[in-house]
Length: 558
Image 1 (tube, rainbow, N blue to C red):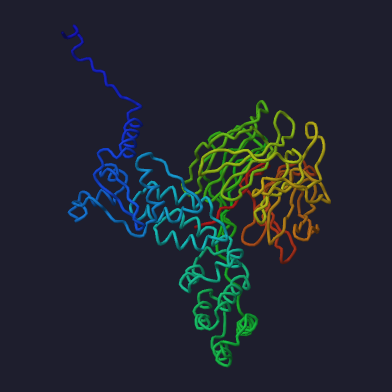
Image 2: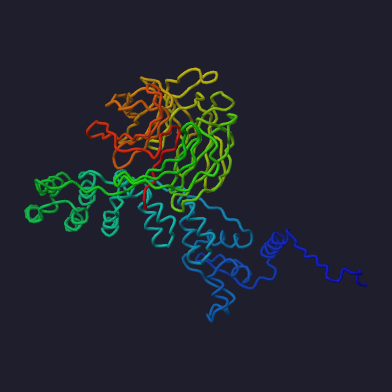
Protein backbone atom coordinates (compact mmCIF):
# COMPACT_ATOMS: atom_id res chain seq x y z
CA UNK A 1 0.00 0.00 0.00
CA UNK A 2 1.54 3.32 -1.13
CA UNK A 3 1.88 6.18 1.32
CA UNK A 4 -0.50 9.03 0.56
CA UNK A 5 1.15 11.97 -1.16
CA UNK A 6 4.57 10.35 -0.92
CA UNK A 7 4.73 8.68 -4.35
CA UNK A 8 7.78 10.75 -5.42
CA UNK A 9 9.63 10.35 -2.14
CA UNK A 10 13.08 8.75 -2.75
CA UNK A 11 15.59 7.62 -0.19
CA UNK A 12 19.05 6.83 -1.59
CA UNK A 13 20.74 4.43 0.79
CA UNK A 14 24.55 4.37 0.69
CA UNK A 15 26.40 1.90 2.89
CA UNK A 16 29.71 3.54 3.87
CA UNK A 17 31.09 0.20 5.07
CA UNK A 18 30.35 -1.61 1.82
CA UNK A 19 33.77 -1.03 0.11
CA UNK A 20 35.60 -2.30 3.18
CA UNK A 21 33.26 -5.26 3.63
CA UNK A 22 33.52 -6.07 -0.07
CA UNK A 23 37.33 -6.08 0.07
CA UNK A 24 37.32 -8.12 3.28
CA UNK A 25 35.06 -10.69 1.65
CA UNK A 26 37.41 -11.15 -1.30
CA UNK A 27 40.34 -11.35 1.13
CA UNK A 28 38.53 -14.22 2.89
CA UNK A 29 37.79 -15.90 -0.46
CA UNK A 30 41.50 -15.65 -1.34
CA UNK A 31 42.69 -17.09 1.97
CA UNK A 32 40.14 -19.93 1.83
CA UNK A 33 40.67 -20.64 -1.86
CA UNK A 34 37.02 -19.94 -2.70
CA UNK A 35 35.91 -18.98 -6.24
CA UNK A 36 39.54 -18.56 -7.44
CA UNK A 37 39.87 -18.82 -11.22
CA UNK A 38 43.53 -18.03 -12.02
CA UNK A 39 46.88 -19.22 -10.67
CA UNK A 40 50.07 -17.11 -10.70
CA UNK A 41 53.42 -18.87 -10.60
CA UNK A 42 56.78 -17.19 -9.95
CA UNK A 43 60.19 -18.57 -11.08
CA UNK A 44 60.76 -20.37 -7.77
CA UNK A 45 57.65 -22.43 -8.41
CA UNK A 46 55.53 -20.92 -5.64
CA UNK A 47 51.93 -20.42 -6.78
CA UNK A 48 49.13 -18.03 -5.77
CA UNK A 49 45.46 -18.86 -6.41
CA UNK A 50 43.68 -15.58 -7.22
CA UNK A 51 40.59 -14.04 -8.79
CA UNK A 52 40.84 -12.59 -12.28
CA UNK A 53 38.45 -9.76 -11.43
CA UNK A 54 40.54 -8.66 -8.44
CA UNK A 55 43.84 -8.69 -10.38
CA UNK A 56 42.27 -6.86 -13.33
CA UNK A 57 40.84 -4.20 -11.00
CA UNK A 58 44.29 -3.41 -9.61
CA UNK A 59 46.54 -4.00 -12.61
CA UNK A 60 46.23 -2.77 -16.18
CA UNK A 61 48.62 -5.58 -17.14
CA UNK A 62 46.24 -8.27 -15.95
CA UNK A 63 43.19 -6.38 -17.24
CA UNK A 64 44.67 -6.40 -20.74
CA UNK A 65 45.74 -10.04 -20.39
CA UNK A 66 42.28 -11.22 -19.38
CA UNK A 67 40.26 -9.08 -21.80
CA UNK A 68 42.38 -8.79 -24.95
CA UNK A 69 42.77 -11.58 -27.45
CA UNK A 70 45.87 -13.07 -25.82
CA UNK A 71 46.63 -16.74 -25.26
CA UNK A 72 46.84 -16.13 -21.47
CA UNK A 73 43.15 -15.20 -21.54
CA UNK A 74 42.26 -18.86 -21.79
CA UNK A 75 44.91 -20.24 -19.45
CA UNK A 76 44.34 -21.19 -15.83
CA UNK A 77 47.99 -20.68 -14.84
CA UNK A 78 50.21 -17.68 -15.64
CA UNK A 79 53.97 -18.00 -15.24
CA UNK A 80 55.63 -14.68 -14.33
CA UNK A 81 59.38 -14.58 -14.94
CA UNK A 82 61.84 -12.31 -13.16
CA UNK A 83 59.68 -11.62 -10.10
CA UNK A 84 60.72 -12.92 -6.68
CA UNK A 85 57.97 -14.75 -4.81
CA UNK A 86 58.13 -12.28 -1.88
CA UNK A 87 57.50 -9.40 -4.26
CA UNK A 88 54.65 -11.16 -6.05
CA UNK A 89 53.12 -12.16 -2.72
CA UNK A 90 53.24 -8.52 -1.61
CA UNK A 91 51.45 -7.34 -4.76
CA UNK A 92 48.80 -10.06 -4.51
CA UNK A 93 48.19 -9.19 -0.85
CA UNK A 94 47.91 -5.52 -1.85
CA UNK A 95 45.19 -6.43 -4.35
CA UNK A 96 43.15 -7.99 -1.53
CA UNK A 97 43.98 -5.60 1.33
CA UNK A 98 45.03 -2.23 -0.21
CA UNK A 99 48.20 -2.40 1.92
CA UNK A 100 51.82 -3.23 1.13
CA UNK A 101 55.02 -2.88 3.16
CA UNK A 102 57.78 -0.91 1.42
CA UNK A 103 61.32 -1.06 2.81
CA UNK A 104 64.78 -0.02 1.72
CA UNK A 105 65.49 -3.70 1.04
CA UNK A 106 62.55 -4.35 -1.28
CA UNK A 107 61.64 -0.96 -2.77
CA UNK A 108 63.57 -1.21 -6.05
CA UNK A 109 62.46 -4.78 -6.80
CA UNK A 110 58.92 -3.85 -5.84
CA UNK A 111 58.90 -0.81 -8.12
CA UNK A 112 60.28 -2.89 -11.01
CA UNK A 113 57.54 -5.51 -10.54
CA UNK A 114 54.82 -2.87 -10.08
CA UNK A 115 56.06 -1.18 -13.26
CA UNK A 116 56.00 -4.46 -15.20
CA UNK A 117 52.58 -5.58 -13.91
CA UNK A 118 51.21 -2.01 -13.94
CA UNK A 119 50.20 -1.72 -10.31
CA UNK A 120 50.31 2.05 -10.75
CA UNK A 121 49.50 3.04 -7.16
CA UNK A 122 52.22 0.76 -5.79
CA UNK A 123 54.73 2.08 -8.30
CA UNK A 124 53.93 5.66 -7.28
CA UNK A 125 54.27 4.79 -3.57
CA UNK A 126 57.68 3.20 -4.25
CA UNK A 127 58.72 6.29 -6.20
CA UNK A 128 57.76 8.55 -3.30
CA UNK A 129 59.68 6.26 -0.92
CA UNK A 130 62.83 6.63 -3.06
CA UNK A 131 62.38 10.41 -3.25
CA UNK A 132 62.14 10.50 0.55
CA UNK A 133 65.51 8.69 0.81
CA UNK A 134 67.42 10.57 -1.90
CA UNK A 135 70.88 11.85 -1.00
CA UNK A 136 74.22 12.71 -2.56
CA UNK A 137 75.45 9.11 -2.32
CA UNK A 138 72.59 7.59 -4.34
CA UNK A 139 71.21 10.37 -6.57
CA UNK A 140 73.16 9.29 -9.69
CA UNK A 141 71.96 5.70 -9.53
CA UNK A 142 68.44 6.80 -8.67
CA UNK A 143 68.41 9.17 -11.64
CA UNK A 144 69.26 6.32 -14.04
CA UNK A 145 66.74 4.06 -12.31
CA UNK A 146 64.05 6.74 -12.62
CA UNK A 147 64.75 7.26 -16.32
CA UNK A 148 64.56 3.53 -17.06
CA UNK A 149 61.28 3.02 -15.18
CA UNK A 150 59.74 6.39 -16.13
CA UNK A 151 59.41 7.86 -12.63
CA UNK A 152 59.12 11.63 -13.30
CA UNK A 153 59.18 12.85 -9.69
CA UNK A 154 62.18 10.67 -8.80
CA UNK A 155 63.98 11.77 -11.97
CA UNK A 156 63.39 15.44 -11.22
CA UNK A 157 64.34 15.32 -7.54
CA UNK A 158 67.45 13.17 -8.11
CA UNK A 159 68.49 15.63 -10.83
CA UNK A 160 67.86 18.51 -8.41
CA UNK A 161 70.33 17.01 -5.89
CA UNK A 162 72.78 15.98 -8.60
CA UNK A 163 72.93 19.49 -10.06
CA UNK A 164 72.66 21.55 -6.88
CA UNK A 165 75.24 19.55 -4.90
CA UNK A 166 77.49 18.45 -7.74
CA UNK A 167 80.72 19.14 -5.86
CA UNK A 168 79.67 16.65 -3.18
CA UNK A 169 78.21 14.18 -5.68
CA UNK A 170 81.35 13.75 -7.78
CA UNK A 171 83.35 12.90 -4.67
CA UNK A 172 81.17 9.82 -4.05
CA UNK A 173 82.32 6.36 -5.12
CA UNK A 174 79.18 5.95 -7.23
CA UNK A 175 80.33 8.79 -9.49
CA UNK A 176 83.50 6.99 -10.63
CA UNK A 177 81.44 4.13 -12.11
CA UNK A 178 79.04 6.18 -14.25
CA UNK A 179 79.03 5.79 -18.03
CA UNK A 180 80.33 8.38 -20.45
CA UNK A 181 76.76 9.04 -21.59
CA UNK A 182 75.63 9.79 -18.03
CA UNK A 183 78.64 12.05 -17.41
CA UNK A 184 77.94 14.00 -20.58
CA UNK A 185 74.30 14.34 -19.53
CA UNK A 186 75.41 15.86 -16.20
CA UNK A 187 77.90 18.26 -17.79
CA UNK A 188 75.31 19.44 -20.31
CA UNK A 189 72.86 20.61 -17.60
CA UNK A 190 72.47 24.36 -17.82
CA UNK A 191 71.73 24.56 -14.10
CA UNK A 192 74.76 22.56 -12.94
CA UNK A 193 75.99 24.34 -9.82
CA UNK A 194 79.64 25.04 -10.68
CA UNK A 195 81.19 28.48 -10.37
CA UNK A 196 84.91 27.83 -10.53
CA UNK A 197 87.00 26.34 -13.28
CA UNK A 198 88.57 23.70 -11.04
CA UNK A 199 85.13 22.66 -9.80
CA UNK A 200 84.24 21.39 -13.28
CA UNK A 201 87.70 20.19 -14.37
CA UNK A 202 88.44 18.08 -11.28
CA UNK A 203 85.56 15.61 -11.74
CA UNK A 204 86.66 15.12 -15.36
CA UNK A 205 90.17 14.30 -14.13
CA UNK A 206 88.94 11.95 -11.39
CA UNK A 207 86.58 10.07 -13.69
CA UNK A 208 89.18 9.68 -16.44
CA UNK A 209 91.95 8.56 -14.08
CA UNK A 210 89.72 5.90 -12.52
CA UNK A 211 89.95 3.82 -15.74
CA UNK A 212 92.52 5.67 -17.74
CA UNK A 213 93.12 3.08 -20.46
CA UNK A 214 89.44 2.96 -21.46
CA UNK A 215 88.56 6.59 -20.74
CA UNK A 216 91.50 8.68 -21.94
CA UNK A 217 89.93 8.85 -25.41
CA UNK A 218 86.84 10.43 -23.85
CA UNK A 219 88.80 13.38 -22.50
CA UNK A 220 88.37 15.62 -25.58
CA UNK A 221 84.64 15.00 -25.65
CA UNK A 222 84.23 15.78 -21.94
CA UNK A 223 86.28 18.98 -22.10
CA UNK A 224 84.26 20.20 -25.07
CA UNK A 225 81.09 19.87 -22.97
CA UNK A 226 82.35 22.06 -20.13
CA UNK A 227 83.14 24.92 -22.50
CA UNK A 228 86.58 25.93 -21.25
CA UNK A 229 89.14 27.64 -23.45
CA UNK A 230 91.72 24.93 -24.11
CA UNK A 231 94.40 24.38 -26.79
CA UNK A 232 93.33 21.08 -28.40
CA UNK A 233 96.55 20.75 -30.43
CA UNK A 234 98.73 20.99 -27.32
CA UNK A 235 96.57 18.56 -25.37
CA UNK A 236 96.44 16.02 -28.20
CA UNK A 237 100.20 16.20 -28.73
CA UNK A 238 100.96 15.95 -25.03
CA UNK A 239 98.68 12.95 -24.59
CA UNK A 240 100.20 11.32 -27.67
CA UNK A 241 103.62 11.46 -26.05
CA UNK A 242 102.32 9.69 -22.96
CA UNK A 243 101.48 6.03 -22.70
CA UNK A 244 97.98 5.79 -21.30
CA UNK A 245 99.00 3.14 -18.80
CA UNK A 246 101.48 5.60 -17.28
CA UNK A 247 99.05 8.49 -17.02
CA UNK A 248 98.28 9.21 -13.39
CA UNK A 249 95.65 11.55 -12.00
CA UNK A 250 98.30 14.23 -11.36
CA UNK A 251 99.70 13.92 -14.89
CA UNK A 252 96.25 14.29 -16.45
CA UNK A 253 95.62 17.34 -14.24
CA UNK A 254 98.94 18.90 -15.26
CA UNK A 255 98.29 18.31 -18.97
CA UNK A 256 94.84 19.90 -18.85
CA UNK A 257 95.93 23.01 -16.94
CA UNK A 258 98.94 23.47 -19.21
CA UNK A 259 96.61 23.24 -22.20
CA UNK A 260 94.45 26.10 -20.93
CA UNK A 261 94.95 29.23 -22.99
CA UNK A 262 96.75 31.94 -20.94
CA UNK A 263 93.99 34.48 -21.58
CA UNK A 264 91.13 32.02 -21.12
CA UNK A 265 87.81 33.24 -19.78
CA UNK A 266 86.28 32.05 -16.53
CA UNK A 267 83.24 29.79 -16.74
CA UNK A 268 80.23 31.90 -17.61
CA UNK A 269 77.81 32.28 -14.75
CA UNK A 270 74.43 30.64 -15.11
CA UNK A 271 71.26 30.73 -13.10
CA UNK A 272 71.12 27.65 -10.87
CA UNK A 273 68.98 28.72 -7.93
CA UNK A 274 66.31 31.20 -6.99
CA UNK A 275 65.90 33.00 -3.66
CA UNK A 276 62.48 32.96 -2.00
CA UNK A 277 61.58 35.57 0.62
CA UNK A 278 58.60 34.40 2.65
CA UNK A 279 56.54 36.90 4.65
CA UNK A 280 58.41 38.78 7.36
CA UNK A 281 57.67 41.76 9.56
CA UNK A 282 57.76 45.51 8.90
CA UNK A 283 55.74 47.20 11.66
CA UNK A 284 53.15 44.52 10.90
CA UNK A 285 53.18 40.97 9.50
CA UNK A 286 53.86 40.74 5.76
CA UNK A 287 51.99 38.33 3.48
CA UNK A 288 54.03 38.53 0.30
CA UNK A 289 56.25 35.92 -1.31
CA UNK A 290 59.10 37.51 -3.28
CA UNK A 291 61.29 35.56 -5.73
CA UNK A 292 64.73 36.77 -6.83
CA UNK A 293 67.29 35.67 -9.39
CA UNK A 294 70.62 37.22 -8.32
CA UNK A 295 72.13 37.05 -11.83
CA UNK A 296 69.37 39.01 -13.51
CA UNK A 297 68.47 41.00 -10.35
CA UNK A 298 64.80 40.57 -11.22
CA UNK A 299 62.09 40.22 -8.56
CA UNK A 300 58.73 38.60 -9.16
CA UNK A 301 55.90 38.02 -6.69
CA UNK A 302 54.40 34.66 -5.78
CA UNK A 303 51.08 33.73 -4.21
CA UNK A 304 50.52 35.39 -0.83
CA UNK A 305 50.62 33.46 2.45
CA UNK A 306 47.01 32.47 3.26
CA UNK A 307 47.33 32.86 7.05
CA UNK A 308 49.80 35.69 7.51
CA UNK A 309 48.66 37.45 10.70
CA UNK A 310 51.52 35.91 12.62
CA UNK A 311 55.25 36.33 12.97
CA UNK A 312 58.45 34.60 14.09
CA UNK A 313 57.71 31.36 12.26
CA UNK A 314 60.26 28.84 11.00
CA UNK A 315 60.89 28.42 7.27
CA UNK A 316 62.79 25.69 5.42
CA UNK A 317 62.71 24.08 1.96
CA UNK A 318 62.45 20.45 0.89
CA UNK A 319 62.71 19.87 -2.85
CA UNK A 320 60.29 22.28 -4.54
CA UNK A 321 58.30 22.83 -1.33
CA UNK A 322 58.79 25.54 1.29
CA UNK A 323 57.46 24.78 4.79
CA UNK A 324 56.29 27.57 7.09
CA UNK A 325 55.88 26.27 10.64
CA UNK A 326 54.45 27.77 13.82
CA UNK A 327 54.86 31.41 14.82
CA UNK A 328 52.57 33.47 17.04
CA UNK A 329 49.50 35.61 16.58
CA UNK A 330 50.47 39.24 16.50
CA UNK A 331 47.47 40.38 18.51
CA UNK A 332 47.76 37.95 21.46
CA UNK A 333 51.21 36.30 21.28
CA UNK A 334 49.58 32.86 21.10
CA UNK A 335 52.01 30.15 19.99
CA UNK A 336 50.80 28.29 16.88
CA UNK A 337 51.22 24.70 15.70
CA UNK A 338 50.00 25.42 12.17
CA UNK A 339 51.95 24.51 9.04
CA UNK A 340 51.63 25.96 5.55
CA UNK A 341 53.41 24.54 2.50
CA UNK A 342 54.27 26.60 -0.58
CA UNK A 343 54.94 24.72 -3.81
CA UNK A 344 57.40 26.80 -5.79
CA UNK A 345 56.63 25.05 -9.07
CA UNK A 346 52.87 25.47 -8.88
CA UNK A 347 52.96 28.81 -6.98
CA UNK A 348 50.30 27.57 -4.58
CA UNK A 349 49.81 27.08 -0.85
CA UNK A 350 48.34 24.11 0.99
CA UNK A 351 47.77 23.67 4.71
CA UNK A 352 49.98 21.02 6.26
CA UNK A 353 49.55 18.76 9.26
CA UNK A 354 49.89 20.71 12.55
CA UNK A 355 53.02 20.18 14.64
CA UNK A 356 52.88 18.22 17.87
CA UNK A 357 53.98 21.33 19.78
CA UNK A 358 53.03 24.95 19.20
CA UNK A 359 56.15 27.13 19.02
CA UNK A 360 57.60 30.41 17.76
CA UNK A 361 61.10 31.81 17.30
CA UNK A 362 62.13 28.18 16.72
CA UNK A 363 64.58 26.67 14.24
CA UNK A 364 63.44 24.82 11.12
CA UNK A 365 65.78 22.72 8.96
CA UNK A 366 65.61 19.86 6.45
CA UNK A 367 67.48 16.58 6.93
CA UNK A 368 67.10 13.18 5.25
CA UNK A 369 63.94 14.10 3.37
CA UNK A 370 62.19 15.37 6.53
CA UNK A 371 61.41 18.77 8.09
CA UNK A 372 62.63 19.42 11.64
CA UNK A 373 61.22 21.94 14.14
CA UNK A 374 63.54 22.57 17.08
CA UNK A 375 63.13 24.48 20.34
CA UNK A 376 61.58 27.93 20.22
CA UNK A 377 59.26 29.65 22.70
CA UNK A 378 55.98 28.52 24.17
CA UNK A 379 54.13 30.60 26.76
CA UNK A 380 57.08 32.96 26.93
CA UNK A 381 59.65 30.31 27.90
CA UNK A 382 62.22 28.48 25.73
CA UNK A 383 61.15 24.92 24.88
CA UNK A 384 63.36 21.81 24.68
CA UNK A 385 60.96 19.74 22.56
CA UNK A 386 61.96 18.85 19.00
CA UNK A 387 60.14 16.95 16.27
CA UNK A 388 60.26 16.14 12.57
CA UNK A 389 57.72 15.77 9.79
CA UNK A 390 57.94 12.75 7.51
CA UNK A 391 56.20 13.74 4.23
CA UNK A 392 55.91 10.09 3.18
CA UNK A 393 54.11 8.98 6.35
CA UNK A 394 52.41 12.38 6.64
CA UNK A 395 52.98 12.66 10.37
CA UNK A 396 55.04 14.59 12.91
CA UNK A 397 57.30 12.43 15.07
CA UNK A 398 58.93 13.54 18.35
CA UNK A 399 62.70 13.20 18.81
CA UNK A 400 64.94 13.50 21.85
CA UNK A 401 64.63 16.81 23.71
CA UNK A 402 67.35 19.37 23.18
CA UNK A 403 69.97 19.68 25.90
CA UNK A 404 68.94 23.29 26.41
CA UNK A 405 65.74 24.86 25.17
CA UNK A 406 66.52 27.98 23.14
CA UNK A 407 64.50 30.60 21.29
CA UNK A 408 65.59 32.92 18.48
CA UNK A 409 68.59 30.64 17.84
CA UNK A 410 69.85 29.51 14.44
CA UNK A 411 70.24 26.04 12.98
CA UNK A 412 71.71 24.45 9.86
CA UNK A 413 72.74 21.02 8.58
CA UNK A 414 76.27 19.93 7.67
CA UNK A 415 77.21 16.35 6.78
CA UNK A 416 73.86 14.98 8.01
CA UNK A 417 74.25 16.61 11.46
CA UNK A 418 71.99 19.41 12.76
CA UNK A 419 73.76 22.29 14.54
CA UNK A 420 71.77 24.67 16.77
CA UNK A 421 73.72 27.77 17.73
CA UNK A 422 73.08 30.55 20.23
CA UNK A 423 69.64 31.86 21.10
CA UNK A 424 67.94 32.83 24.36
CA UNK A 425 67.56 30.45 27.29
CA UNK A 426 66.54 30.63 30.96
CA UNK A 427 63.38 32.08 32.46
CA UNK A 428 61.59 34.03 29.72
CA UNK A 429 64.76 33.88 27.66
CA UNK A 430 66.76 36.08 30.01
CA UNK A 431 70.19 34.65 29.01
CA UNK A 432 72.06 34.24 25.74
CA UNK A 433 73.21 30.64 25.28
CA UNK A 434 76.87 30.26 24.33
CA UNK A 435 76.92 26.53 23.47
CA UNK A 436 76.55 24.78 20.12
CA UNK A 437 74.16 21.81 20.25
CA UNK A 438 74.38 19.07 17.61
CA UNK A 439 71.86 16.36 16.77
CA UNK A 440 72.66 12.98 15.21
CA UNK A 441 69.49 11.51 13.72
CA UNK A 442 70.99 8.01 13.40
CA UNK A 443 71.12 7.60 17.19
CA UNK A 444 68.52 10.26 18.13
CA UNK A 445 70.99 12.03 20.39
CA UNK A 446 71.97 15.61 21.18
CA UNK A 447 75.51 16.67 22.12
CA UNK A 448 77.30 19.85 23.19
CA UNK A 449 80.29 20.25 20.90
CA UNK A 450 81.75 23.71 21.53
CA UNK A 451 81.14 27.23 22.82
CA UNK A 452 80.67 30.24 20.61
CA UNK A 453 83.31 32.99 21.03
CA UNK A 454 80.57 35.61 20.61
CA UNK A 455 77.20 34.30 21.90
CA UNK A 456 74.34 35.74 19.86
CA UNK A 457 70.62 35.55 19.21
CA UNK A 458 68.66 36.64 16.18
CA UNK A 459 71.48 35.47 13.90
CA UNK A 460 71.67 33.10 10.91
CA UNK A 461 73.89 30.15 10.05
CA UNK A 462 74.67 28.49 6.71
CA UNK A 463 76.83 25.46 5.79
CA UNK A 464 79.51 26.04 3.16
CA UNK A 465 82.66 24.16 2.14
CA UNK A 466 82.54 21.81 5.18
CA UNK A 467 82.21 24.71 7.62
CA UNK A 468 79.48 26.66 9.41
CA UNK A 469 79.21 30.41 8.83
CA UNK A 470 77.46 32.62 11.41
CA UNK A 471 76.10 35.94 10.16
CA UNK A 472 73.84 38.66 11.50
CA UNK A 473 72.75 39.39 15.05
CA UNK A 474 73.58 42.39 17.17
CA UNK A 475 77.04 42.98 15.71
CA UNK A 476 78.77 42.88 12.33
CA UNK A 477 81.06 40.04 13.47
CA UNK A 478 81.07 37.08 11.06
CA UNK A 479 82.43 33.76 12.28
CA UNK A 480 83.37 30.49 10.64
CA UNK A 481 83.40 27.21 12.56
CA UNK A 482 85.16 24.05 11.36
CA UNK A 483 83.54 21.04 13.13
CA UNK A 484 86.25 18.65 11.96
CA UNK A 485 89.03 20.72 13.50
CA UNK A 486 86.82 22.24 16.22
CA UNK A 487 88.19 25.67 15.33
CA UNK A 488 86.59 29.12 15.20
CA UNK A 489 87.79 31.86 12.87
CA UNK A 490 86.63 35.43 12.34
CA UNK A 491 86.26 36.53 8.75
CA UNK A 492 85.55 39.94 7.23
CA UNK A 493 82.83 41.79 9.20
CA UNK A 494 79.50 42.52 7.56
CA UNK A 495 78.64 46.01 6.41
CA UNK A 496 75.47 46.23 8.55
CA UNK A 497 74.24 44.89 11.89
CA UNK A 498 71.30 42.67 11.01
CA UNK A 499 69.05 41.24 13.72
CA UNK A 500 66.65 38.51 12.52
CA UNK A 501 67.89 38.65 8.94
CA UNK A 502 67.80 35.84 6.38
CA UNK A 503 70.77 33.99 4.86
CA UNK A 504 71.32 31.45 2.07
CA UNK A 505 74.14 29.98 0.01
CA UNK A 506 73.73 30.66 -3.70
CA UNK A 507 76.16 30.44 -6.59
CA UNK A 508 79.14 29.90 -4.30
CA UNK A 509 78.47 32.96 -2.12
CA UNK A 510 76.58 33.83 1.09
CA UNK A 511 73.63 36.20 0.69
CA UNK A 512 72.21 37.96 3.77
CA UNK A 513 68.87 39.75 3.49
CA UNK A 514 67.11 42.48 5.47
CA UNK A 515 67.01 42.42 9.27
CA UNK A 516 66.75 45.10 11.92
CA UNK A 517 69.57 47.48 12.86
CA UNK A 518 69.47 48.39 16.56
CA UNK A 519 72.29 50.88 16.02
CA UNK A 520 70.25 52.74 13.41
CA UNK A 521 66.82 51.89 14.80
CA UNK A 522 65.59 50.93 11.33
CA UNK A 523 64.45 47.93 9.35
CA UNK A 524 66.88 47.05 6.56
CA UNK A 525 66.08 46.47 2.91
CA UNK A 526 69.54 45.80 1.50
CA UNK A 527 71.13 42.46 0.53
CA UNK A 528 74.77 41.75 1.33
CA UNK A 529 76.88 39.15 -0.46
CA UNK A 530 80.01 37.49 0.92
CA UNK A 531 82.58 36.08 -1.49
CA UNK A 532 84.72 33.47 0.35
CA UNK A 533 87.54 33.72 -2.20
CA UNK A 534 87.89 37.46 -1.66
CA UNK A 535 86.85 37.44 2.02
CA UNK A 536 84.76 40.48 1.20
CA UNK A 537 81.20 41.73 1.70
CA UNK A 538 79.33 43.97 -0.73
CA UNK A 539 75.80 45.32 -1.15
CA UNK A 540 74.31 43.63 -4.22
CA UNK A 541 70.68 44.68 -4.19
CA UNK A 542 67.55 45.39 -2.20
CA UNK A 543 64.52 43.49 -1.05
CA UNK A 544 61.18 44.76 -2.37
CA UNK A 545 60.67 46.25 1.10
CA UNK A 546 62.51 46.50 4.41
CA UNK A 547 61.80 43.60 6.78
CA UNK A 548 62.98 41.27 9.52
CA UNK A 549 61.93 37.77 10.71
CA UNK A 550 61.28 36.62 7.16
CA UNK A 551 61.89 33.25 5.61
CA UNK A 552 64.83 33.14 3.21
CA UNK A 553 65.53 29.94 1.28
CA UNK A 554 66.86 29.00 -2.12
CA UNK A 555 65.27 26.46 -4.44
CA UNK A 556 67.40 24.95 -7.20
CA UNK A 557 65.92 25.17 -10.65
CA UNK A 558 65.25 21.90 -12.45
